[in-house]
Amino acid sequence: GKEAHLLRVQLADLFLDNHHVNGHTTGTEALWSGVPVLTRPGEGMASRVGASLVEAAGIGGEMTVRTEEEYVALAVSLVTDFERIRRLRRRLEHGRASNRLFDTQRWVRNWERALRMAVEEAVLRKDGGSPVHG
Image (cartoon, rainbow, N blue to C red):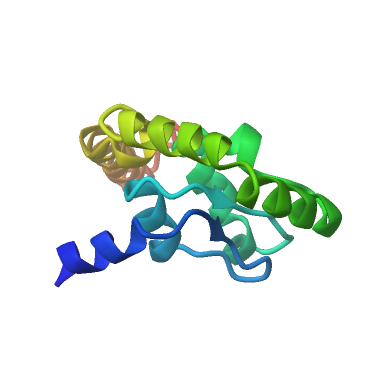
């Protein structure tokens, strides 16, 4: 089941994100499990998700690179520096309750607000008014 899957994910030291299509659910599961994710965003939306995930998890500044050379250099550096990996894992594990990535209540509040705004705008347009937002 899901618990067994997440226990297996925890065995990894580092998650190397694919450049062209980032790990969406798998990246989130890695971060939830305390596994640092190294990512290099690309041009398309599917290749920028990893950067958003690590930023929301509080490690974006350390784990997002711009070039392939930086990606390889940081990956090699990380897998040879177990103390740094341990520090990143601790930050992820301690931040799980407070970082934006896993703050479900905040996400729900924002989603509800967006839905209210969409409904208000639709009602205004129906009544001949102009949109209030944006």
